[in-house]
Every structure is written in structure tokens, then in C-alpha cells.
Image 1 (spheres, rainbow, N blue to C red):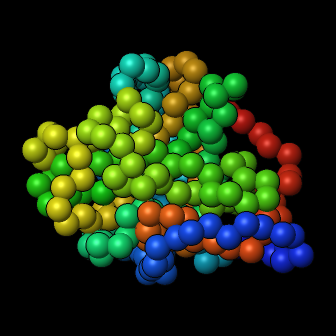
Image 2: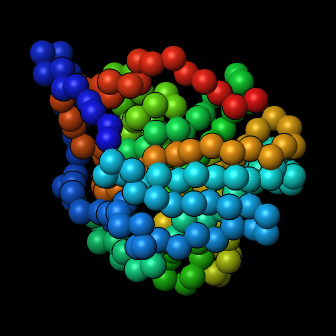
Length: 229
């Protein structure tokens, strides 16, 4: 279980925001999810101290291109057995996780990408970014968010906001949207088989603006960081 410290004595600027909905999708129970992996890859789900534990074993052996950038990647999907329709004001996904790595200087990338399905069946994979809090963006416990779903013109891959697959192929979230799960994406500097663990908790749906929270830090965010190679 992750723990965090509220630091209410700090002074922060309040951000304008629309109405925030606290509803979301539960990380547990484990049997609320199904896993889709390529042959030879595995993603094992277990409950661990109130959080969802994801143990992956992936063989990175493909190079893909998003926008103008190419990289090595292995990926598998963590899908809700009962997808969650999003209300009109719910236009970003937020969640807490441990094990995410986004460090361009080390060419290290291990990410959970929320999956949104629009009313035409197109699947949009949204890049996530660290929510602002003390010591954010570490591989320890932290809070992560997508960009606002409509924060780019069609072609969000070029702007590193989303990529799109299937449906009508217009690379845009049309009409009624549904949260269907996550893609676990692993992007090391070279081809190799990698094993590791992520933890997932507190999946919520938000509006255009990230809601204000009193300053806080996850205690384990101050521990030494280890990267895969």
C-alpha cells in the first residue's frame, strides 16, 4: 500500500478548473480485468496490499514508429471486462502507480497508457504525464494523468498526446467515449527480454483542468531509483 504526506503549510496558487468528477474504475478485484499479450509474453495480475500488482515478462523485438519517432517496443493490454462509459465532463484519466519510468536521458520507458474507445470503435492510446506534486515523475508511487482528450488537432501522435488505431481512422475521439483499460508499453534502448513489476491504484476520471490538491508527496518517492538496462 502506498502512503503519502500532506504538506498543507506550503502556499500554492489555485488553478481555475471545471467540475471534477471523482468517479472512476476500481483497480481491484483482479477478476475485473483480462490480459491480452503476444505469444511468448506474459502479464500476471495479483492483489497486493489493496493495489493491483502487474508482473510482466516481455520480449522486446520490434521497432515501431509514432509520428516521426522510432523506438523498440513490447506491449500488452490490461482490459476491463466491463468498460466504463465516460460522462461529458470526464475528459482525462488519472491514476496512481508505482514502477512507471519516463527518463529520456537513460532511454528508459515503462508506461501505462490509458485506452479510450470512441463511438466509432476507434481506440485512442493516451500518453501520460506526472501530476504536479512534490517529487513527481519518479518510478516510486506517484500520480499520473493523460492530457485533455481534445488537447490536439487530429494527429495527436505528432504532438505526443495520443495515438489511434482502428475505427473510422480519423485519429480523433468522436462522440461518446468509453474507458476500456491500459496498454503496458516497454521501450528499452535495445532488443531484450525484460521482467519487472508495476502497481496500479486509484483510477479516476477528471475534467479539462487537473483539480487542485494541497501539496503532498508519496513517501517512497524519495528512495533511490533503479532503472532497467
